[in-house]
Length: 316
Image 1: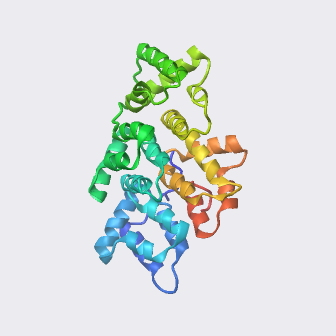
Image 2 (image 1 turned 60 degrees about the vertical axis):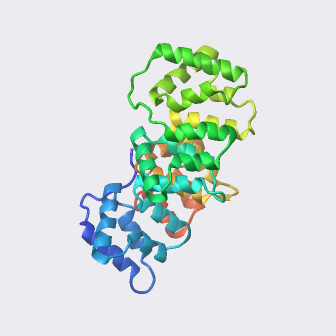
Image 3 (image 1 turned 30 degrees about the vertical axis):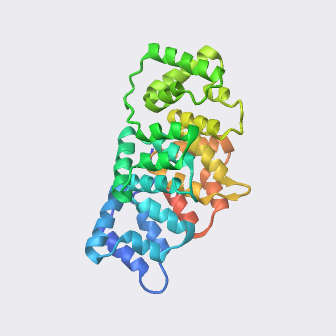
C-alpha cells in the first residue's frame, strides 16, 4: 500500500549521490532536483544513497541537506531520508522532550508499527540517545499516561491471525465491566490493550460491540474533554484501524485555523511507504475532497511539492 513512485529504471546510488551534490553547488540550491531524486526512492535505496554519499564526499548527506534547506521542507526531507527506525526513534525522543512533548506520538509509534519494527525502533533509540525509549517515556510521563504508555512501547505482540474466541468473549466482558464502573485506568484494560495481538483485540472489540450494543470507543466518550480517555480511544483506533486514526490526524492538521505542519509532515513521511493509499481513500471518503487537493490548497512551494510527491501524486 505504498504511495511512493519509484521509477522503473533507477539510477545508480553513485549517480544519485553525484546529482545531490550538484544540487548543493553553484548559486542557490536546486530543490527540484532534490525532490526528483529523494521523493522517488524507497527506504533501502535512500539508505544506500546516504552511504555512497558519505564514502564519495566524506560528508553526511543529512548534514548537507540541513545546511542547504530550511523550514518545513527541510524537516520533511530530513525525516524522509532517515531510516524508518531512526526516524521513529527521533520522533519518539522529540515527543518526550519538555517543549515538544506529545503522548500521542509515542502511542502512535507503539501501536501502528509491527512488533518487529517497534523492536528495531527501540534498538535505534539505544544507539542514538544512549538511553532506552521506555526510560525516557517513563521519566517524562506520570499517572495514567505512564501506566498506559510504558507497556505500549515495550510490547512485543504476537503478529499472527490466530484468534481465541473464548478469550475474546471473556475479555470483552472484563472490558465492559471496568468501563461500566468508570475504572478506565484499571490494570486489566491496560493489560488487554498492551499485550494482546491486534487480531485478538479486534475479535474482542467486535464481540464487545455485538454483546453490549455499543462500540467500545463510544462507551469511552463519557467525558469528551478527558485527556487520558482521548488517548485511550486513540490507542484503540491505532490498534484496530490505523487509517481512520491517521485520517483524523490529517483532517485536524489541515484545518481552517492554519496548518499543523509537524503533524502533516509526520504522517506523510511515516506512512508513505506503509498504508498511505488506504489513508488517502479514508480521507476522501470522510472529507469529500482528495488529500492531494487539501494539501495543495493548504501548503505551498517546495514543501507542497515534496508532500505531493510522497503521497504519490501524478507529476510530482
